[in-house]
Image (cartoon, rainbow, N blue to C red; front, top):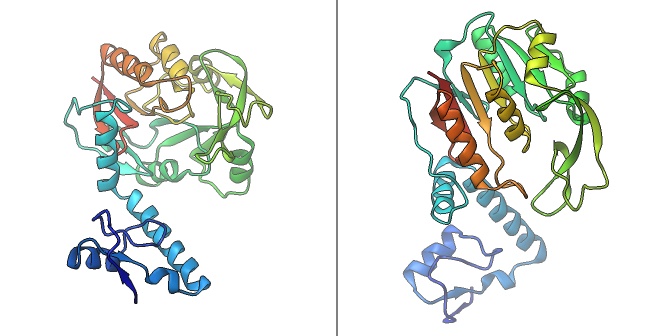
Length: 292
């Protein structure tokens, strides 16, 4: 092993992709100012394995609640996330990344799940635990293909409609990944540079029309994860007679053209309509409301 007294940043960083490793951290603390050069001596295969291990370890760290809370705190400081707080103290549980109040759910409760993507863990958990009727809505082709091959319980009802502010059709575009490539699963109403030429057109209905179509006089729980379309859907909901008891929303103010102010305004108007926050996710974008 070769060591150099080249200046280090003191963070315990060795040469493996710039990631923190236990050995690098140990050496940095024991011999401040030293930088590991042993990495340059490793065979190419071992070097690549080290890079993959370091990246995998970092991805695991990124998913931990503690990391997400710290990240959210820093984003609040620079104005990229809202400083939300719990407004009502109730017993809640978490399934599939969503917090809800179980005491309000029972056999026959009506749940609307807007936006399915490739994950129905939340929906199936509600059916198993509480016997609810779940109506899921997602017009994206990958979701339709996925659910077409699944053996699903009779309480799971899938509708290939988009939910919008009004009836008609809606153009959806593949979501953009962080690297600029197009998602194979997620779709949004926002046209990005990489997806503007690849829209799909799907049937869309308002919540008012859907409840009429399905002969529902109420929605006990409404979950919304529709990649930026939540603002117009919630605007229409607030103007209608439909007032779900529980409302679980992922806000997408990070998407181009939306902005944090739009989320802040919508949350204020939900509060004016009687909706109080009872849970906030670690990243601060999934918010659960109870109508009181």
